[in-house]
Amino acid sequence: MSSIQGKDVRKLIVACDAGMGSSVMLASTLRRQLKGTEVTVDHTPVNSIPGDADVVVCHAGLADRARASAPGVALVPFQVFIGDPAVTRVVDAIRNGGTIDG
Image (tube, rainbow, N blue to C red):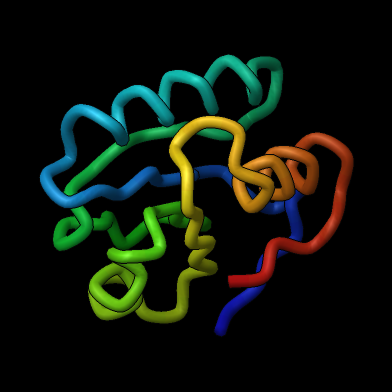
């Protein structure tokens, strides 16, 4: 398990099975929520997480694959694509300060 301070996050990745559809929707929502910060939000297939990712959010069912693809990166699994409390905590930590554990 890795952690990072919200203020240190520069690249947030939304990972999903194919890198399309649901991750695009969540990435778009996160871009709006993090507008005005220095955080870049991208989406990618879970097996292709870029090495410069600071935080990865993905559906809980993909968490093991994401950990294998991005060892040492803070990984935050969630259950629902819109309005999940785990994702809300990530946004709050980036905007207001705090630790992102994953």
